[in-house]
Length: 179
Image 1 (tube, helix red, strand yellow):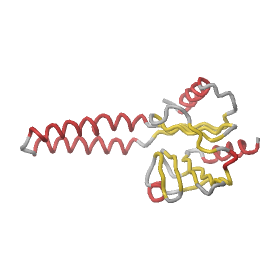
Image 2 (tube, one colour):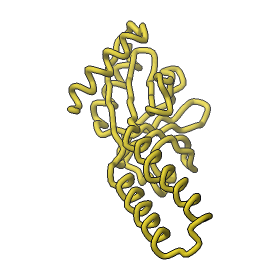
Image 3 (tube, one colour):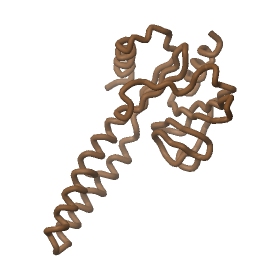
Image 4 (cartoon, helix red, strand yellow):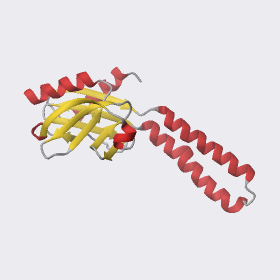
């Protein structure tokens, strides 16, 4: 699916949620496929290894079957469906990590923002990976890459929202704050 059709679907869903304000920026990011493929490969390799090289088939088969269903089927389906949607609206910055969130959640109110900036960061070192993360530098919502908008809030907390379009995201936040 192209990013243009994803954006069109995002806008349609937003209209269904009865939000009638301006949307200054919208982005949908999918998580990298590499991690899911690695987990599938490891699961299949473990399944084959245990099936052929373990002699106690009774108990091992049950554990192996449950592990295969969980990590070989359920996890990949869940992982490959993960999407981080971000919107900058006139009343705040919203995020949705589907399928964990089924509707948008407000991440940042305009009146909470002390300052914001484009930030290049190391997701593993600073936040412990991708997704919804809590690290030494605050909370992060990211799907891939190493660029985002860091919001420093008036209460001293930090929120980082990852993006593949940092300049557009920053311009939209600026527009939100100045209207």
